[in-house]
Amino acid sequence: MNSSSKIIKAENIKLVKKPEDGEQRVFKRDQFTREEPIPSPVLSKTSPESGGAGNDPKTSAKAREEETYNKGFVAGMEKGKQLQKEEFTLAVNVLNELMKGFDRFKREILEKAEGQILDLAFSMTEKIIHQEVTTNRKVIQGVLKEAISNILDRDGIKARLNPQDLKYMMEIKQDFLQSLDGVKNMVFEEDPSVKRGGALLETSFGEVDARLNQQFGEIKTALLNK
Image 1 (cartoon, one colour):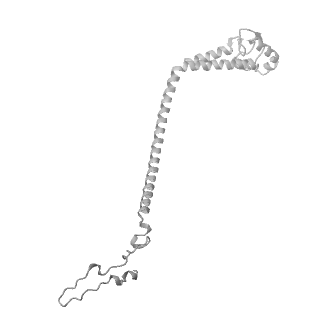
Image 2 (cartoon, rainbow, N blue to C red):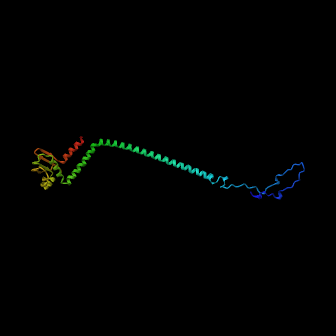
Image 3 (cartoon, rainbow, N blue to C red):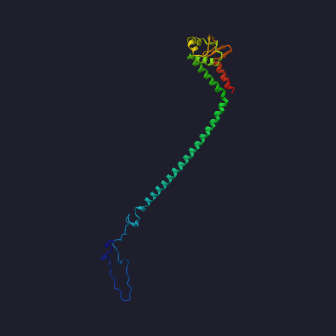
């Protein structure tokens, strides 16, 4: 405390008559005055009385705000993960239902359009066969060998062929006959009614139809009537 605040100046002192014995002494209020008010002690921001920087209301509020935000962020992340898991499960279930529905739809379509699908498949196969016998002259060799393998009496066989196939077979006749077992006196004859790649074989036991279109028709009929 500043010692100057206790100094009493002379002009502030008033002399009064000394009271006689038995008289009451009276003091006036302004007998003693101070030059300056005594300053109140100022507490430092860091002093224990002020609570220190750690108890600053603004700092405390900010800390509480950050704590609340962190808790909310963690809770939000957990909630988001849960929602994502639920949405994924829902999507999988929906996909499974769609796949089941697709399987049922596919079966219904196949049952209703089976005949049309087979017709389309046969049509494409016929085109492929036609393309093959047109570009590959060796097809007739395989057809003849397969047909002859089913004939028991191989003596005196006559093969009726398409003119173009006949021309090719005459070129390789000797080698072709040598590749067959038990075939004797086989002759080739031209027949324009036979399409390329096919043949009609005449034997002592009857006729063997090795025409490709005839065989293909039999396969188609068997599949459609299964």
